[in-house]
Image 1: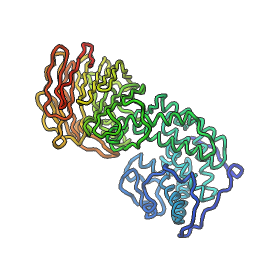
Image 2: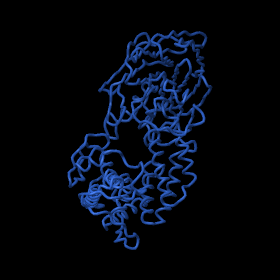
Image 3: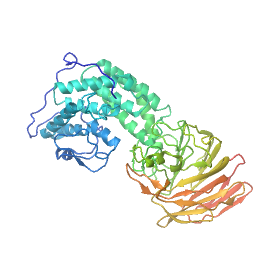
Image 4: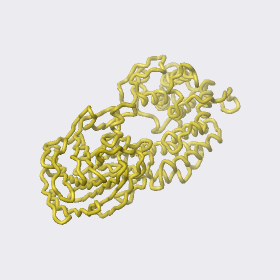
Length: 557
C-alpha cells in the first residue's frame, strides 16, 4: 500500500489531551483497567516476560531475539503471516494490558519504547519502511493496540500516527468489504473514533460493519469465506466489535447481533464430536471450537455450500459428516466440491489435507487442489476451479440421510450421491460422470492401513477396524487395484496438516478408473459382507444388515 495520504498536521483541534501514565522507573502502581486494553482480543503469546527478555514468539514458531532496538525489517522465517503479526504490534499491547493488571511500570515503559521505535522506523511511504508495515491488515490490527497504549501515554508521535491509521482505515480504496479483514478494519477505525470522539469515524465504522457482515455471513449464518475456521474467527471478532460499539456508548445494530447469533449456530454445526472444527478449506484439525448456540436440527444444509450432519450433540462416539457444494472457490476455500468427511465411533475417519500456511509453496498449492480432498476426478479432463456445484436432491430422516450433487467442474457432468446410515454406522458414496473417473479417500493420520486387496482397504486403530469397499455399478463387481499412498513427495500426496506449518504422513486410497464407482465405508469391522441383488446392495455391519438402493440415475437411497 503506497497511496498518498495528505498531511494530518498536529491534530491539536481534533484530539483531546491524553492522560499521562505513571513514571517510567521500574516499580508497581495501581492502574485502572480500560476497555481498550482488556478483553480477549490480545493473543496469549508472547508473554510479557518473554518480551521483556528480548524474545518474540509468534504463530507457535520458535522465539527469536529482537533486542532493545528492534529491527523492523527482520524476517527470520520468510513467512508473510509472521511479518503481519510482527507489524500488528498486538504483542506490544500485551505489555500494556499486563501493566493494567499488575501495575508493573516497566511493562508500560517497554511498550512505549517499542511503539515509538516502530513509528520512527516505519514512516508511511518511507524508503526503508518495511513492505509489510502499511499493508491493510497490519494497519487494522495495530490501530487498537496503539489506542490501548494511548490510554496511558500522551505524545504527539502517537496521536499523529493514530490519525494516519484512521485516515487509511476510512479510505474506501483500502477497505476489504465482505471479509474478515474488513471487520478488523472497522474495529480499528471504531476504536480510534471512540478514543478521540470523532463521530464521523464512529458512524462510518459501524455502518460499514453492518454492510460488510451481511456480505460475509448469509441469512442462514454461514460464513461465505468457505472455511469454518474463519467462521470461528469472525464470530470472535464480531464479539470484540460488538463490545467496542458498546464501549463507545452506541447501541449495537440489531442486524449485527442477529448475524453473530446465526454464525454461532454455523460454527456449532461444523464442530465434530471431538470438539474440533471439521478441517474444510483453510482449516486445520487442531482448531477447537467453544460451545456455542446450536442449530435446532442435527442436520444442517447451508445454501453457501455445506451439509453438516450428526447423530448426537454431546456424545464423542456419535457420527458426524460434512459434504461440500455451492459456488466455486474464493477467499479461504479449497477446490473441494463434492468432498466428504466422516467421523464415527469416536474417531475421525475421512478427513481433509487441511491448512499448512499461506506461503506460495508447492505444498500449499497441493492442499488447495482436488487431489488433497475426498473427491471424484474425471480422468483426462481439465479441472475448472470456478465451477459451481449444485445440490439437486436430499432425503433427511433421523436414521438415514442422502444427498445428490452435480457439477461440470471437469467440463462434463459428474454426479455424487452420498448416503449416511446411523445406528448401524455406514457411509456410501456413488460417483458417476461423462467419462472414466477415479476418487480419493484421505484417512485420518491416526489410522493405519492393515490390508488392501480384492477391492477392500482395511484401516486400524489398535483393535478397532474400518473397511472401505469399492464396487463397479451397475454390475456390482469388486473394483480391484486401489493404491495406498502415504507421505509421497513427487507428486505430493498422502499428507495431512493438523496445524499451522505442520504436516504428517497419512494414508490416501486412490481408486482405479471406472465409469461408475460405489464406495462403502463400514466403521467397526475389518470384514463386512457385501451382497447385491436387483439394484440393492446389502452390507453386514457390526450392528446388523444395512440395505442400499442404487437408482439408475446415479442416486442412493
